[in-house]
Length: 293
View 1 (cartoon, rainbow, N blue to C red):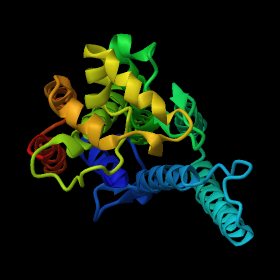
View 2: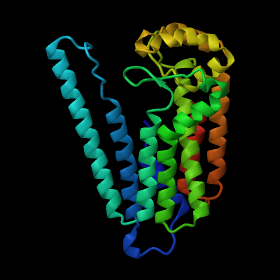
View 3: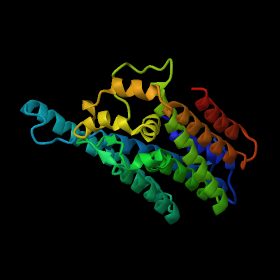
View 4: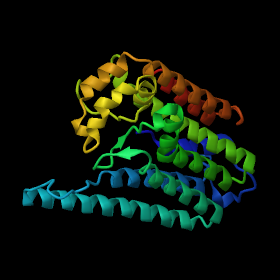
């Protein structure tokens, strides 16, 4: 899990702040109290979304045993309430900052997270599946899915923290681009993990069927849909060992490495806008470390 709150604080420190009251500044950290609060809001929104995604769609007849059904129903209630509690707290913290533009910006990031759950085909548990229509342009399909589910939140958090510091719209836009490209580079890194030598991937275990290597391979060879379409009811019906073997021999791995490199370079280019500092160096090191994984 990437520490998104830390990224927001580092970009805050790298950019500095303008015309801010002395009381607002956390001198020890070099950021504003409001920026620290926004970093916490970002973490809470991200975590609440992950908790909500843990809910199970209890279809009729899926759990015939009453004891198991009761356990799953109780688990769903806990996931729903826990996620709602975090989301409600994040809304309260956001409102306390008393910045209407920031509230609107972060609200749109929450909307994007929800919208990302409805992109493309899904099985009965809402696990994503590649769409035949989407693989005509695998890069566009992958980017849409991951900007909505990750890039938007980090990008808008970085944009929002620069707004709080009193920076102009041009620098705020650079902040958004940095967060978006960093999130996409990290996602490409995660997508590569099951397919690289020395990874902890166990043969036959499940992985994301809309990951970049799979989508790129489907663009190159749509015949893989024959296996993937077995997951229309449940992704567990797919032979992951077979998919892994086919994708590992195709062009998807090298294309994903190139995709990760492109987004890392774009994030690094944005960093040059900020003056040299320890915070900028730390962000740069994070990007370099991703390329070494």
